[in-house]
Length: 226
Ligand code: CDP
Ligand code: CDP
Image 1 (cartoon, helix red, strand yellow):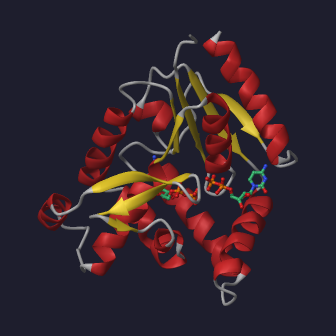
Image 2 (tube, helix red, strand yellow; image 1 turned 45 degrees about the vertical axis):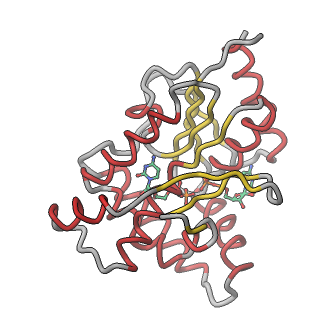
C-alpha cells in the first residue's frame, strides 16, 4: 500500500492546471478538487441574487444560504460542481462569471468559507487540488506543490478555443482582457494572493503537450509517494 499525499497545483489563469490535476488524479486514483469552481459557484450565486460583495454583512448573510458540493458524474467521469443541489458545472465557466470571480474571490469572508471546506476535503489525503493559494494557504504542508505557468499568448489562445466552442460570439480580445484582469487581481489582492510557494516546483507547459506535462508531474509524484 503506497502512502497517500496531497498534491497542490497553483498558477496563472488558463495555464493547464485543471487538465493536469485531472490527469494526475486519474493516474494515481486520487480525488481531484477544482477549488476555482467553488469561487465561480459563489460568484454565480452573488450575481443571480444581486448580492453586493463590497458589503461584509451582505456577504455573511449570503454565504449562509450557500451549499457547495462536488458530485461524481458517471457519464462524464468527472466530479461536477453543485450549488444548492443544482449542477452548475457548465454555467460557471461562462465569461459573465469569469468577469466578476476575481473580485468575489478577493473578499476575506468568501475565502474563509471556501478554504475551510477545501481543508476538510483534504483530511484523508489522496487528493489533487488546483487553484491559486492551495500550496501557500490551504495545504502549506502538502508533499508535492506544483506552480504552473505558460506564455500569455498561449493561455489566451487555449481559453479562447474552449469558450468559442460554447459561444461563437466570444472575441479573443475579451478573453485576453479577462485573463489579464484576473491575473492582476489574483496576484495583488490582500488576502492570499497568488504566489509561488517557496517549496513549489515550476512547470512551464508553453511547449508541452498534455501527455508530456503528465509524464513530468507523474515522475515528481512518484518520487514523493515512494
Ligand atoms: O481555470 P481558470 O484558471 O480560468 O480559473 P479558476 O481556477 O476556475 O479560478 C477562477 C478564479 O477563482 C480565479 O481567477 C481566482 O480569482 C479565484 N480562485 C482563487 O482565488 N483561489 C483559488 N484557490 C482558486 C480560484
Ligand atoms: O485550469 P486552468 O485554467 O489552468 O487551465 P485548463 O482549463 O486546464 O486548460 C486550459 C486549456 O488549455 C484547456 O483547453 C486545455 O485542454 C489546454 N491545454 C493545452 O492545450 N495544453 C496543455 N499542455 C495544457 C492545457
